[in-house]
Length: 239
Length: 239
DNA sequence: TTCCCGCATTCTCATATGTTTATCGCTTGG
DNA sequence: CCAAGCGATAAACATATGAGAATGCGGGAA
Image (cartoon, each protein chain N blue to C red):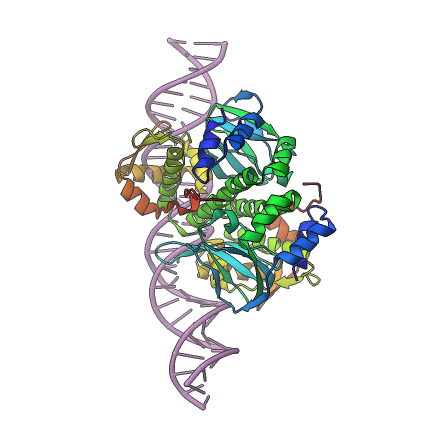
């Protein structure tokens, strides 16, 4: 049930059997939410954090005029709002991109873990640090790369992050984003986003059908995107 | 010496006398670095983290062609690369924006704190979570606000963050950024950045002379920027 | 003093991206 | 079955922003 989270953490450092059991025990019952359901809202003070068991979600910051910027996309096994354990007041929404299976972890449990399990706490801390590293890479892509390269980068990242948890099938993976949502993630208009997607297709870099993307030319895609996975901290070392 | 860090953490939660003493004891001797000195470089595996005692620094992600995106600006009292305690390999540079006084904290010491001081550890964790929240707000500004609003937002943030530590003098504070660096932070060309700065002046929102900015019309500036300081977690509550 | 060089500024011109509006195909619900 | 709504796509046009090149100012080095 929380095996994907365990798998993801173990890519970064070894976990003891006890730690794995603590993770399994900390989650509440699984729950299904429909597509577009707001799991947490800007302004909320949640008393539990959410583990994404199955499906995809995204974080978005809303501006006053209703415009929004998507700042992250979550894949299964992500601890999507772990930060609200300490941040307390949510500064953004978390919304289901697809139907999702989620489970809650009470902050009281996280508090207990943080008092008694320093290594596991560091691993949770690390996972929020990786989120921040992803934010930084997104900033670089938005600020200093072309719309085309930016879109390519997002696909590379989705590929690698789904590959971590065994969700890539050959060269093909899920990208359950409508073009309007993709536009909100890239900071573009949806019309220009459409141009960009079509150019990725015309250049024979990817095939994008419905919610599945197939990479036709990884080197071309990663080269265009200047993709370097270092920021995802995929090395396993003592932390 | 590390009083500014203590002050900043105490804005978010109470620290015990023991915790404050641990912070004071953890830092090594102060060191001066000149403007433009790279304190940490992309790719490094530092064995200590850096506390900024005096002066300003910035983080920047470099792309292959030498383009860079500034992803954060640090003010005195910031623990500028605390994340490399767990991230291990730096995914960006940290550079002095002005002459700085810095001090190092060995990762071995942080490790010890994380084993024995759960509350202090959570406070350090929180400070990295606030960094991430700032990244998200920057993403929204880059992706969904005009260049002018984005620049205004950066100034609001610098104002509030310096105000936290008593560095605002009336309505005036330091913004030690050349227009080229400001451009790298906003994701704009330096020519357009110049246009934007001049428009902020023409609208009588700010005065910007050398490295000092004086806010002439806070409501106008914050309104233009859609500035809402929630993301800076300025509430003091048990964490 | 003189010579640089970094920085702010201005101009001209190019273009990536935004805006508006419309069409078309699907799916869904009554 | 039809209506409604959503998503992808398209075309025409507008504009914010980028690129290149030039100027002038001011401080620091010799």
